[in-house]
Length: 65
Image (cartoon, rainbow, N blue to C red):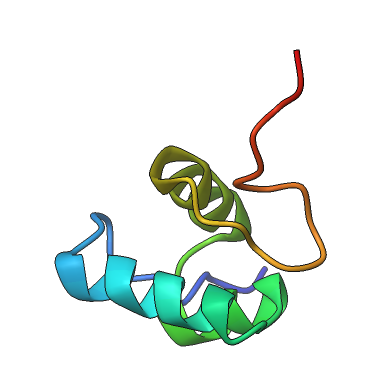
């Protein structure tokens, strides 16, 4: 069984900024996981919390009532 290469546990201000810049540049969620070295679910949760819209997904979009 392969071990995961994710080493960072918490989100830093630099991680948040990198997530914002990649989302604004239209980068994919898969590329974000590689660059940030964080699991996809962690990136989804953080983007949702910061209301960052990730292209090609519904992550970060406001829900209609």
